[in-house]
Every structure is written in C-alpha cells, then in structure tokens.
Length: 504
Ligand code: AMP
Image 1: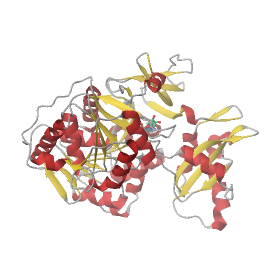
Image 2: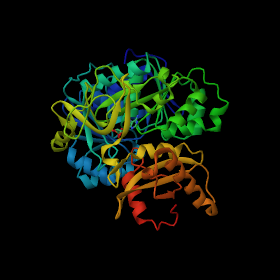
Image 3: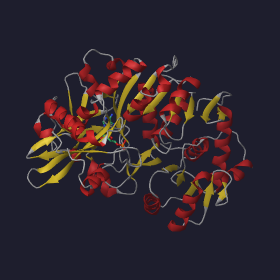
Image 4: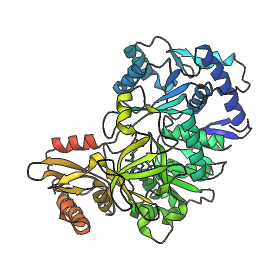
C-alpha cells in the first residue's frame, strides 16, 4: 500500500473499509499472529470466501513474511484435508461462515488449535486478540526467496496440486498487472475467488491506491448493476462470465463511462463471442493467458481487439516483458514460427515448485524451462495461438483433432451456450469425438435430433468429417472443477455412463 487513506479501499456488500482502517486492522492482526509464532518461513492455511476480512488477514500473514495458503471453499473437504496433511501448515485459520467445515477439517487432520477471523463458537477469535495490539503500521518482513503463497490448480488434468510462489514472483505479478491493466488507481470488481487470482487482483488494486469491490459468487445481473453503481473501471472474468454479462438485460441500457478494461482468460474463448463483447462494451476487452504455475504469460491488448484482422481474436496475444516463449516438439527441439508444439517458457514469475512435491515439480520445470502442457504456435508478429492442452488432443484414426477448434464451431451456433469436446475410446478408430453441449434455451424433446444434427453438420462443413462429433449430448449445465473450469474427467465419466438416448 502506498499510504493509509481515508477513502474506501475494500467494498463487500454493505461493508466499506477505508485505507486507514485496512492498514490498522492488518497491522494489529499481524501482531496477534506473530504472538502465535507466525514469522518468515511459517505457513498459515486459511479457509475463506470473498470476505473483507480475508483481505485483511492475508495482508497480515504476508506482511509478517509468512506464507498464505488459500483453501478455497469449493474444493471438496477431502481435497482440503489432503492439502493440510501434505502441507502441515503451522497455523489454521478460518472465516466464521466456514465454521462447520473448519471444525470437520480440524478433527480429521488432528489440528488442536484453530483461529477464527471473527466471532465463532469454534476455535479462538483472533480479532479479539488483535484488539489489544497496537495498530501502527508494521515494517514488512518479507524476503524475496521465501514462499509467499500457495494456491491450488484446478485439477482439470488430474488431482489438484499446491503451487508455491515466492515474494519475488508476487512482485513480478504486480509489475505484469501494471503493464497490462495500466496505472492506478483502479476500481476493480472482483467476482472470482480471493483464494487465488482474485486475492492477487485485490492486492494489486490496493498497491495502486485503488478500490476492490468484492462479490462472493458471480451472477451476471448483480455484476451488471455493480459496474455502474460503483463506477467500476476494471473487471476480470472467465470467457463464460463475460458472455453472460454481455447478454444480461441489466447491461443493455447501462451507461458505463468509467469502465476501462474487461479482462478475460483462464479458459478458451470463442472469437465470435469476443467480437460480440467488443461490439457491446467498446474497446475495453483484453485477453489474458496464464496459469497458476507461471503467472501471466501473454496478453492480447485492447487495441488488438479492434484491429481489422479478426483472426487475432483467436490469439492469446504477445508475451509479457521478461517472458521468453519457445515452442518445442516432443523431443524438446525448438520449432519455428507457425509450427505447433508445446508452449515452454522462462519467466520471472514461474512458481518455486509444487508445494512439498519436488517429484511433480521436476516433471514440468526442467533446465530453467517451464513446460505448460499447452499446445500452441506463434505467428510472424509474435502473437501466440493456443491449440489445446497436450493431454486433450483426440486421435481419431491417427488424425489429430483439437477439441478447442470443435468447441469454437459449436459455440458459434446461436443455440449453444457452452460446449466441451472430449475423446472417448472407440473400438474402430481408437478414439471418437464426443461433445457435451448446454443449449442457450431448452430444446424440445422432439427437436433434439434435428438440433444435434445441425451442430455436427456445422463441424463437418467447417473442419471436415474427422472432427465431426459422433455423439452430442445436451446437458442442462456443464460439470465444473472447483475453479469453475469445465471438468473434462467428469464429462468423460458422464458420457461413459449415459444411456446415449440423446445420440446425434
Ligand atoms: P489454471 O492454472 O488453473 O488457471 O489453468 C491454466 C490453464 O488454463 C492453461 O495451461 C491453459 O490450458 C488454460 N488457459 C489459461 N488461460 C487461457 C486462455 N486465455 N486461453 C485458453 N486457455 C487458457
């Protein structure tokens, strides 16, 4: 933070916290946590939602030079238990509204001492302990090489893993955010979990003297209303959030003169939908490509979104300063521009490693290069295009099918809200293409076959018959991972178990 200020810096529902209050509360809380033995090198696991207290508590932990481990409520209790047993944090804290799960975790993990951030009938209320502490600003004791935070991967390609970053990479994140999102102060609407990227965004916003407006769960109507009411300048969402927002009736007549940036990323997006979003919101769209292990990698700027070459909307943009990208084949040889291979990179913001799992770290971090598991290519101007995840390629009769290309054709159909394509085992062709589709409006039972036939025909005409799904199922909602990404494992499982009544 640049200085204690009298304006609101955190807004959560009806709660508004000024810069001065934030600094005072974080400083007093840090002193109370220091009394519990928290210091550089120690780890605090914290179970919380998008609460104002979590902003204060995370600042308190990190200002002591200790490591914050964000336990996102949406992970299963079993997964959180595994993180706690593997990670052995020195302290466990929780928001009072997470009380029941906190109690269950403590009993199963054998944690005898837990602190609640507020009044609760379980654990000790650490805010009471902080009341007695001086609230003068603390001198931060972080050291560049120490671990500052652990977040968790989505588990879309296997079990979720803890990802550890140092204080040095956290300051690299801030440099990148400033480079992409422009100078502060921002009024940033944060509707993604504070236990990972959302929490980072809050800290970058505070560091620039801005205001973070917190929303616990994304609902397009609510977010559309807050954009105008809170004079929001910046918003970050997944492509599906941006799509829902653009189509929300609340946004149609909204005047949003303050909105400067709507960043999207984290999952593949549909170029036709992004073009719609630019038409609706103006030249404020920015595409971010990154992963928790590597931080931000590249971005497609606002000006790129309004260039006449519309194919650029297929791109995840150009690398951030300091990020070096190499496209490599399976043998590790670097490929020229235009060739498809694995995206590998060197960057100041690459993780220190998977949390207490050096065995997993050495699989992805080799000779200073991080192997993303994403397939991509670059063009002559240095724009990067992602083709798919290496593990998601479907091989049909020895032909490579990239599910993302099929998904793009499907989502360009006006009747499709969401589409996810995976490979299923096939006795004749090795694998076959399967599409799970959530229609934008319910399809009457009598029209299902006609609708799915329209979709498969669109794929055949655009990409050729190898890409054509041999089966399309219509779902009422897409199975998601705890981080809100399509859960491909669950989709495959459902497909294998389904009766196939909706086969195209
Ligand atoms: P996570 O670390 O859970 O955010 O997942 C990172 C993965 O999400 C990346 O390796 C990509 O496969 C995918 N991803 C992230 N950003 C984008 C993007 N802008 N476009 C397509 N895929 C993305």
